[in-house]
Amino acid sequence: MKSLFAKILLWFWFTLAVTVVGSAFISALNVNENASDERAPVARLVTFQLEEARSAYEIGGRPGLQAFLDTLHRVYDARGILTDENGRDLLTNEDRSDLVRRARRPSLYQFFRTGDATVPRAADDGRYWFFYIVPRVRVGFWFLLPEHVFVMAAGVLLCYWLALYLTSPVRKLEKAVERFGRGDLSARVGSNRHDELGQLARTFDRMAGRIGTLLTAERRLLLDISHELRSPLARLGVAVELARSGDDTNSALNRIQKESDRLNALVGQLLQVTRAEGDPSSLRRAPLRLDELVQQLVDDSSIEAAAHGCELKYEKREPVTVAGDPELLRRAVENVIRNAIRHAPRETAVEVSLARDNGKAVVGVRDQGSGVPEEALPRLFDAFYRVEGDRDRASGGTGLGLSIARRAMELHKGSIRARNAQPGLEVEMELPVG
Image (cartoon, rainbow, N blue to C red; front, side, top):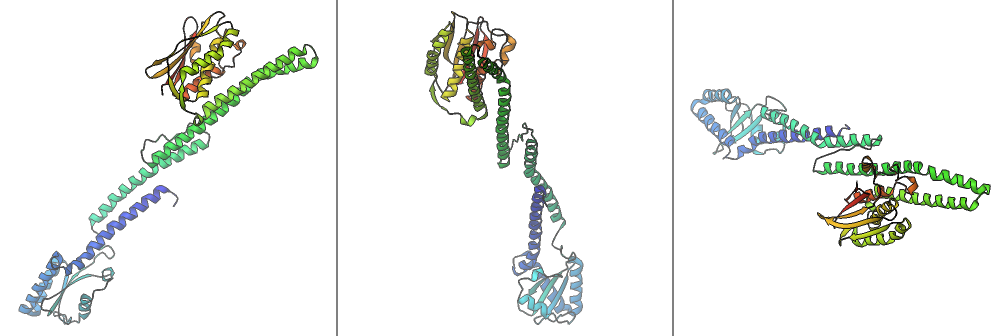
């Protein structure tokens, strides 16, 4: 028997059957045991029958005793035997001393013998013994009533429901595991139970989600690497050929160095994105003064802004403390600021602000450029996405900066959005204040 459902059903049904049959059997055996208790109804009934049989015998002799015993059999469907103190049957003159001996020395196992059930009673003066004999018509099931069978049938239905209730989440979990094992990473149990089985199902769902995230991040990393590394590798090949030809070697070496640096930065950003997306457990949370972090990033980026012919302005700021990973938040804000610098026209200002809004810290970065098409705004934070026109490869970006910023915000239960400010593009990052 390999089915857990069948095991649970049969085990509970067997337990119920033993309980019902055992209770009925014990109740039947108590008929004999209660005969020794003068207050029990059975004892009073047998005592009354003894007195009636004795009176019938003493007054009417054997004919009177025969008439009484015939009435007893007709009314109670049972037999009666009246003997003297030595066990001699007063009606048939048979030797019933074995009944007297068993009545005086009851055996521990007498209730488990087959045959009719006998309830003995001795007269107060010791002169008579009366034996009330109940026939066991259904041998082996004489103690079961139709009500007992009905209770067992109801118990079978309840046991079936209980077994189904216990094994149904296990079957759902089995199907989800089987689907997940075949490669369906979306397989989930989705249990709403609040017991241990529900907790097990939710644990599997979390595990499946974690594995799915890791596998998706790995696949995305491979696709991103294969897509993004082709161009710099091709340019490296051209630069190497130019260096070998001996024509303008310095320029070729500078080109090789530039493409090597680009490849190194690209790989670093890819690893940063994959780590942020694939391993949320590695996120460190610590109290962080966000206003001081933004101020430091503005100071560090001022040189780059000056090289692009623009300036950074950080005038609107409030003291704000958040809980999060300092390095990841630094990367996120820095990427947004550097993205704005790359696309800011010369002799314009990139405005950086920090404010509180409904229990959240809002970091705003706005350039004075041409903005982006409205249809491009929803995809602006996708990895490797670039807007055609002004925001293209010539700007020097890899298309990962805003993607890293978005994933960093999501890991910190925050959000990031962009809108055209006319002129320019404004990016807002929201973080819960901690």
